[in-house]
Amino acid sequence: MKEADLRRARSRLRDYLAPMKAHFGRREVQSLVETYVAGLLSDAHKKNAEAIAWEVGEGRVRALQRLLTSARWDEAAVVDRHQQVATELFGSDNGILIVDDTGFRKKGVFSCGVGRQYSGTLGKRDNCQIGVFLSYAVPEKYHTLLDRRLYLQRDWFTPPWAEQRARARVPDDVVFRTKGQLALEMLDAAIARGVPHSWINMDAGYGEAPWFLDALHSSGERYAAAVPEATRVWTERPATLVPKRKGRRGPRPTKLRLAKGAPPSRTVKQVAADLPLKAFESAILRDGEKGPIRIEVAALRVWNSRDKLPGREEWLVVIRRLGQQPETKYILSNASDDTPRMAIAYAGLARWTEEQCFEQGKDDLGLSEYQTKTWTGWMRHTALVMLAHAFLINLKVDGEKRTRAGDGAATALRRRTGT
Image (cartoon, rainbow, N blue to C red; front, top):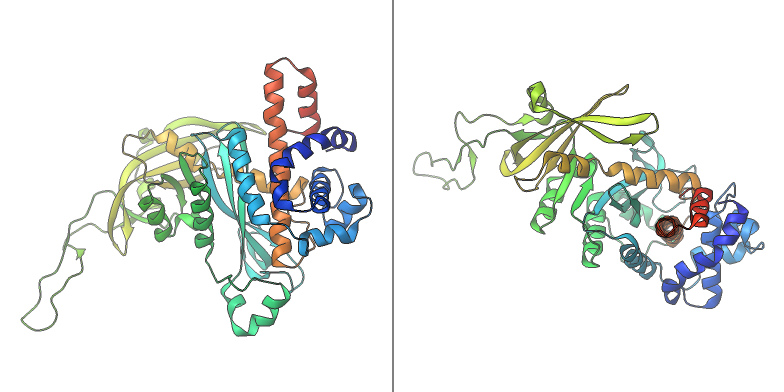
């Protein structure tokens, strides 16, 4: 926001943060939170505590640094309340919960969770931190971040890293968890809080984990999961059997195996290559910067592969994106067999909304510009960035209400704030 816009929006920001102030504790901390979030929303060149202090915080550098490290406030409760507020503002039964991760490149070795690891954001292995995020999208309307976890590689929990953990102030109760486990933890929490939704979406890094999809299916959740092209399925359910015992000695076989002559599983890429042209239906996904984004969608029922045996029957949706950069995506979904293919396709491609959240967070709200190296610092900075982003969505929702009521000033405010 420009300085004049931020001044006009400051009282509205205070109102937006009001439901959470009990979790910020003392009035001084409440004031610092408002200042920090205002700094994230400002057009300051940098969005770390020092830059924010000089931009909108009257030079209170140490105070804003303490806000992220040692001030007494409950960032977990703030995120909980943030989800409730977001649900009240624009929650919808058509909402989509989306899990994905993003990388934060770092030069040093002391930041919490830093290490040489692969980041899809960076497109390579690099020295970075990885954050796993949960976002929420209401199709064709709103999307914002709901929760986050800092991923720590397994090495961080070995004895040689004990000093590093202590320096980064990693809580004693934090144990190693995979990205999928972190994602499932956030999903379970959001669902328990009553965030309304009809789909869960994820990229191939999570969709390729059978245990993750099975956990969602067992809990009654409907997913549209991107999977790698090497994912194996059957287009016909193969026969299985428990082999007969050979001879009279030895234990009796108990495990299922494919019956002799049963067709082997094939990759989703192979299955898609065999589909005739008439199997694909054309559609417009959404309007892009250079015009409509056109896709072709085919769908068929398949059986997923579990331990090289057929599992449950699911949808395989093949999506071909047309244009100058054609690509093919593969979506597996446990949706019912009467679910329209386009509904699965749109849910399966919803991850672009979380990518937009990352882009706006990093480009405009300082998501990656923090200087804190501690566990608490990262958790608090990202929580406040989420509040800043949700506040912009709040302006958009409120602006649309006023526009429908004929308030031209609201339209001007939306234009100025980029919402």
